[in-house]
Length: 264
Image (tube, rainbow, N blue to C red; front, side, top):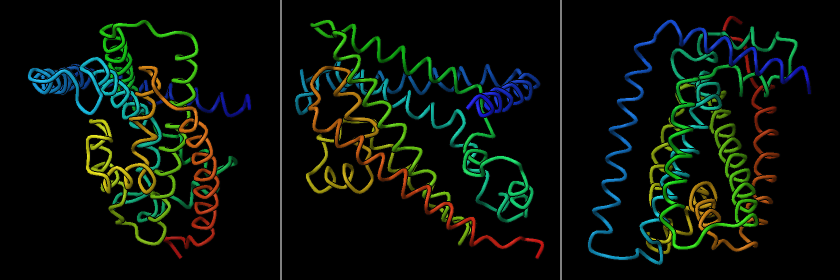
């Protein structure tokens, strides 16, 4: 365990040194996030200018959901997204043959390909997500308690495990087709998480809950944060995350065994 912690620190510090060479990117990142955030909050404000609730979601609830969405997306873009995203595509390791060297590393392959590349600038988005969540909670009429905080942490852990499992599963498809667009398609579907799942039509709600679990990744953590989540959804999310993680890991191992060196 300590060895893996040291490796994570090494990966992060290496990425931090690389980012320090391009300081202008930080200002661009702040500007981009500010514009995106202003548009999101402004859109929510306009949406609620003529109504007090949207399918039982108040302005404060929806603001908290936006914070959860930003936080989850930022965590994805912090390291798992860049790491797994380096496998596919014309410049990916599977196409160029760089995966040969990855297999020679004296480290567990799944851990390495999932954590090796970091984008430290996304820590700013993580903090923005937390700030928006705090802003949303501060607008609520009732203060949240310890039990609500614990359920929120539980729901967020479920969400991050589910998100990682889906990304690992979709990235593994690149072993069969290096140009697989599935990660891009999933990113597009995740955009629907900007709004509560229950505002969509029933068939879409079911699809976003049990087929592509956007509800468990965004909406349910937001419901936990505002104190109205059902324990059955938290237990169900944990079970779904555990099963999907096992399936994704098994599928990735099978994909690695199928891999044929680009130089062979």
